[in-house]
Length: 144
Image 1 (cartoon, rainbow, N blue to C red):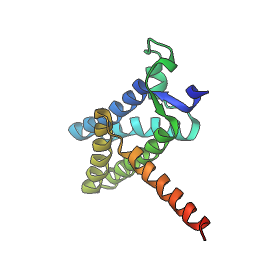
Image 2 (cartoon, rainbow, N blue to C red; image 1 turned 90 degrees about the vertical axis):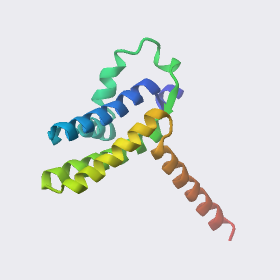
Image 3 (cartoon, one colour; image 1 turned 180 degrees about the horizontal axis):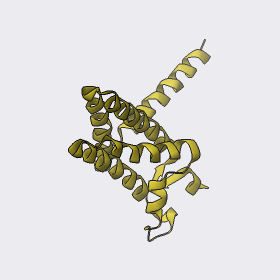
């Protein structure tokens, strides 16, 4: 059952590297359509529970899935929602000629993915704070 609630860390890392490399390649080449790679993969994961980047990387795992360090599926889904929002906003901004906004949105997602690769998950921290706030709010309302 735990395997259905987690994603092996190597698959999460591949997704994070895909975000960073695609966006940096888009910046360096000016081919903003490269942002569509992680954007479409992320949308696939959110809407259809099928992220082609992770699915493709799964073939390269040498051990059984449950032998890798697990990443919480709900945390990763939340992170993917944030990434898709920023990637989509960045891509749309570039399409509209709003270069500063395009860079602002894509810089935020690249920084978050890079920091996550190094070990600190910004999205997980935000989600944890949100859950704490919800808990405190429900607890406070029950005390009256």
